[in-house]
Image (tube, rainbow over all chains, first blue to last red; front, top):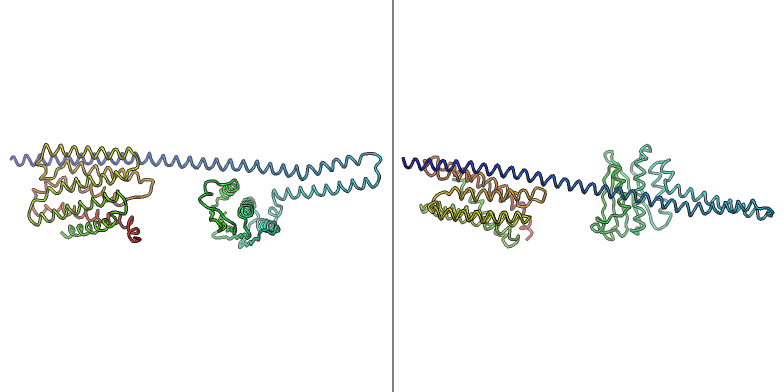
Length: 263
Length: 208
C-alpha cells in the first residue's frame, strides 16, 4: 500500500514535469517565432531603405548629368556659333555703310560666307554630338561603326569591333542606351584607362543580346572603386536598368577592364 | 544492444576528430571538446560500473550537469549581444543555485533520476540552442547541424529520462525498450555531430 502510494506520487510528479516540459517548449517556440518575425521584417525594411537610397542616388545622378549636358550644349552654342554669328551680323552691318569700294564689299562678303559656313559646320557637329544621325537612320551597328571610326581617327587607340548579330531598327530607342553606354565606356578607357586597344563584341544568345567590352588600359582596383562610383558609372547603371539588363565589371591594376552586359 | 555500441563508436570517433582540433579553433570549440570528453567519461565509467555490477545511476548526474555547463559556456561564447550573454550567464548561475539547494534539501535524489535536474539542465540548453538558431537566421550558419542535433536529442531524451524512474520498476522484457530508443537517438545525435565536423572542419583539418 505504501509502495503503491509512493509509486502514484512518482507518476503524478512525472506527469507534472512532462506537462511543464511541453509548456516550456510551446513558449520557446512562440518566442522564437515572434522574435524571428521581428528580425526578418526589420531586415526587410533595411533592405528597402537601401534600395530607396540607391534609387535616389541614381535619380540625382541623372539630374546632374542632364544639367552638365545643358551646360556643355550652352557652351558649345556660345563659343562655336553665337560668336561667329555675331561677327557675321557685324559684317553685314558694315555692308550697309555707304561709300564702300568694290574690293571692300568683296572682302566683307567673303568673311561672311566663310563664317556662316563655319557656323553651319559647327552646328552640324554639335547636333551630331548630341545624337548621331547615322544611329537614327541606319541603326546601332552603323552608329557604333562610326563611333569606332571617330575614336580610331585620333590614332591613340585601336578599336576591334565585331558584330555577330543584327539589330532591329525599330528597337532604336533601346539601342540609343547601348550606344551611350559604349560611348561612356570608350571615353573612360581613353581618358582614365589610357588604353591602346579596345575590343567590342556583340552576340545574341537565346534572344538576349550580349555585349563584351574590354580594353588593355591601366584598369582599377575593384574594391576601391566600388564605393565611389563616378557620374559616368551611375549613368551606365541607370541605362542598364532601363534596358532590364545586367552588367558586370572586372578589372585590376594594369590588367585593363572587361565589361559584360546584356539587353 | 548493437545500437548502443554503434553509438559508442561514433561518439569515440567524434571525440577523436574533435580533439585533434582542440588548440586550433578557439575557445568555443574547446567547450565542445570538453562536452564530448564528458560524454565519453560518463559512458565509459557507466559501462565499467555495469560490468562490475555496481549501480551506475549517479553518473547520470555527471552527464547532465557536465552537459549543462559545457554547452552553456559553448553557447555563451557564440552569443552576439550583451543581453544574450547576460541571459545565459544568469540563467546558468540560477540553474546551479537551484540544483545545489535541491540537493541539500533532498540528498537521496542523488541515487535516482532527478526530474528537476533533468528538466532544468536540458531545457536551458535547448533554450540556448534556440537563441543561437535565432542568431543564425540571417547570417552565416555556424554549428548549425550540432545545434539541430542538440535540440532534437535533448527534447526527445528529456522525456525518456523523465520516465526513467518508472522503468526501473518495470519487468526486464520491456525495461530496456526506452533505452534502446534512447541509444537510437544517441546515434542520430552523434551522426549530426559528425556531419558538423565534416561540414565545418574537414577541409581545415585536411589543409593542416
